[in-house]
Each structure stands twice: as C-alpha cells, then as structure tokens.
Image (cartoon, rainbow, N blue to C red; front, side):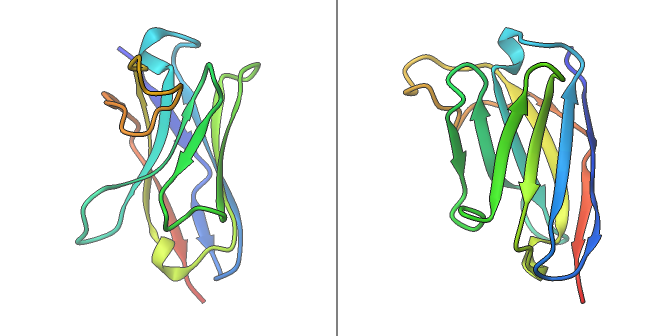
Length: 128
C-alpha cells in the first residue's frame, strides 16, 4: 500500500505562484513509477493536470495548465512537485497527488496511466 502526503496549498491572488509537494511512503517502486497531479473544483469532475514518468523524466500537461505549471521530481528527497505559476481564478480546486505503475509501450510517458494511489488533497484558492 502506498500513501501519498501532499502539502503546499494555500490562497493566492491571480498571477501568483504556489508549489505543491507530494511524498510517497515508498521510494522508487513499480507502483510509483508514474506520478501525477489531478484537481477537482466544486461541482466539477476530477481532471488530470500533469504527470511525470520517474525513469524517463518525461512530463505531460493538460492544455489548461501547459506553460504555467511544471511537474518535477527530486529523487534524493523522494518528492514530486507541482509548481503553479500565473495562477488564475479557474485554477481554484483541490489538488491531488496520484501514483501508479508504468505501462510498457507508452513511449516512456505516464499520460493516461492507471493511477491507483491517491493523496488526501490540498486546497488551492486563487482570488483577489
């Protein structure tokens, strides 16, 4: 069983920045070779935001955050980050870290991976 510990949410003004952190309870493991961030706003379905393949380090982003958010990993700290820049009110949501196995044949990427482990979420509010 993998536990994911998220932190870093908060309230910021439009145009501001935040960094979210996610620490899996285990290091490099088959169950955590794909790491991702999702978000869910009130009244909306949960949506994929970004993913990173921990071996290839290839990243993918949803169109709504591409160019503003960056997913990164620090293997020494066993931490996955989501850097949120140029935040907009529509980015307001609860953000969830997720982990899952890498599926071969996906060109080294984790976009569309089956994320089976989830954190409790951290709230991001963007408001003036």
